Amino acid sequence: MSVPLHEERDGRTVWDGAVEVFDITGNPKAHVCFAWLNRTSDSDERFVAVLGIPPVVSPVMAVRVAIAAEAKNLE
Image 1 (cartoon, rainbow, N blue to C red):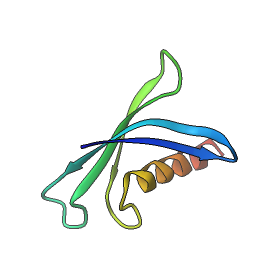
Image 2 (cartoon, rainbow, N blue to C red; image 1 turned 45 degrees about the vertical axis):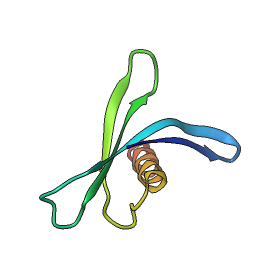
Image 3 (cartoon, rainbow, N blue to C red; image 1 turned 180 degrees about the vertical axis):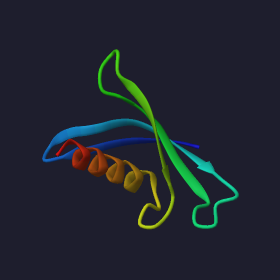
Image 4 (spheres, helix red, strand yellow; image 1 turned 180 degrees about the horizontal axis):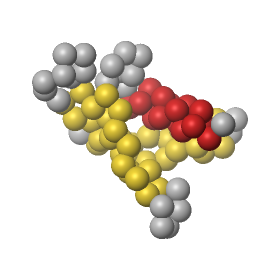
């Protein structure tokens, strides 16, 4: 399933795109995975995948957690 998502912070778009939601098996803690393509420029793109382990229980939370993790790595 593909979920369109637009995330803003302080009136600015921080992420806009589609999050793919996949059911997964074989993981004792997660039964779903959220994934998307993150393009930061025309030449820089990467795939992001976040397991659905609480508190990540929705596409919105998956994107927020990924944004927070990326910001932390830039510090």
